[in-house]
Image 1 (cartoon, rainbow, N blue to C red):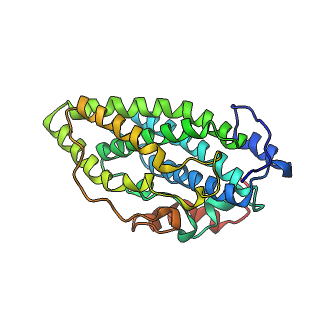
Image 2 (image 1 turned 180 degrees about the vertical axis):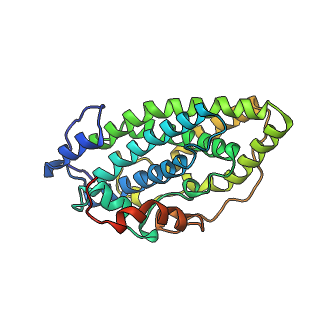
Length: 273
């Protein structure tokens, strides 16, 4: 399957992307839009969770660091959702605030509660490794808009990964209590890892455009195994969840998150701030 595309700058922003897709020749096809929607939802929901740490971090620097990572991640979400919405005449805000729970396509890892700080670091480590591999592969997409978004996002994820690795080592090699919490955090997040790499229906017939999730698994496994070895930790031995986020199946934690995220926009639809 092919879509009409035009090479865009790697310095893509949601605003510049919105201007570009006003040109109908750059609007995503329905199938590409469905793929971009899942990518955008992953980043949107993770950003919402990271935002919960603002003013709640273990130290002031982490309030800023996690807030900045959340803002980067929200920027990725805005770009993907803007591109997805171009196929349906919907804005990023329409997609973020006016869809119901089953209409979201995020993986269940990203919607889990933040837990304690170590649990958030465990998820961020997994997410950064996953996004890093995904965006490196997507940067070579024949869809130049997806490629541009992935190229910019991938550069930012390198910082996110470095931040996660530093805290992984600091917690796992620190005190007995910090190590216990890091182990518990990894154990809590690990059941959701497998879903990231399962077959995605939105990828079908998008050869050379989308990234097959399973193609990312071997690099992810090798990278996280190396990091856990350096941290003197073992890969958690836990069962994987059934998942289903890409099909609109979500965990109990998702409903309250969505209600909080959408309440203001739904209470004042169309308001300008």
